Image (cartoon, rainbow, N blue to C red; front, top):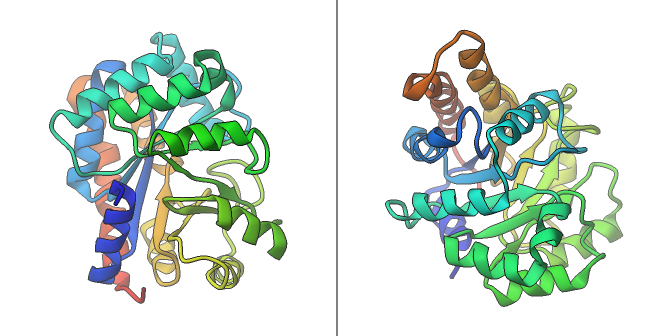
Length: 275
């Protein structure tokens, strides 16, 4: 059983919704990324999404775009991201970690080579934002051969047939996009999201995480009432950005992000569990 499957099974047994936290590798500084990952887990993250910096992050809002720019300015690339994962795994062998990024860096490395390197480093799943589930079948095949989960975004505009098809190809969990737009953007209509998630549950037994636009413990608590996991990125990265703007460096630069995760975890736990 994969780390993702084990984690979601444990959450289901405990009747708790999971908390998935996204950060960009190399932001605010490459020397802090591994420490940040450990701190996020200690603060209550159940699953980590580590963003691979990319020069044209089309699905990301301005907050994550700026995080990618800062990371790229520090010389981050896919190989360095995998090195960070390997370092993280030296002391954390249980927390699931998903790479989230774009196809171009993977193609530059070579899909089969990337999949093997990611698995060796300790990656559990891959979400390639700009790769639809029904294109590049060799990509999914390479991930499967390496024992990696293929995680897909499911948009609010996806019809029932496409939702079923995506669910049939995915593994690990399904990532339901709560807004029409980029990460961190727009107001989330939680009643509409709930209706879509409940309809989706009729077509899959995979856990469903809800993200894009989730910013507050209150919103996280509401989503925890009907989804298997809450996914948050921009609201956490904003705390890292604020620390940098204030001239805070070193481990102290991580404290705001860590406190944000603690608040999100408390909000989710206060909601109780229905899964």
